[in-house]
Length: 184
Image 1 (cartoon, helix red, strand yellow):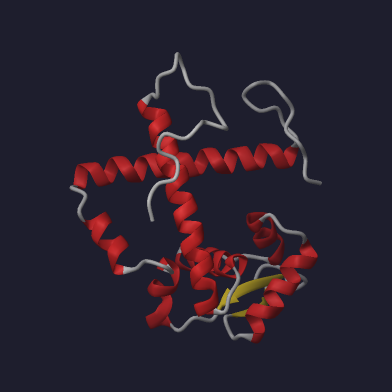
Image 2 (cartoon, rainbow, N blue to C red; image 1 turned 90 degrees about the vertical axis):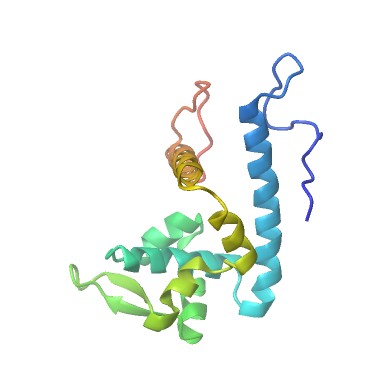
């Protein structure tokens, strides 16, 4: 897939004095990668027989399990940005398919936690999901210093995106001082 954003108009930020800054070029490259990755996920949905939300939920649950954390339905719904009724339907699907179990919380018997049921030998493959060898090869081609820069950048971008989502959900002002829309 080729980048559809090269030379395209900027629809979500302003160009400064008609020049494309390196930062803008990075954001455009990320946008193009995001489009390509979304398309790849949609293509793989048919193979996995899971929706994008199902796959995202499983990845979140597996990462939490690997980190030794438990996840409840409410946390999962907040992460996915869906309503409690939608997360119930999603969990019903995943449970019927044998991907998760709902268990009583060890901390509060009234609460439920969601536990992925992927066999141990498949855990890493499930977390990585669509990591085809072509993608692994590209990432492996980075020297350690470049890899460290990319990892740091992507982690900071993820934190920024998470902060934006949290601010929008709370109806807090964004950087420009405007109040963000609350989805509740």
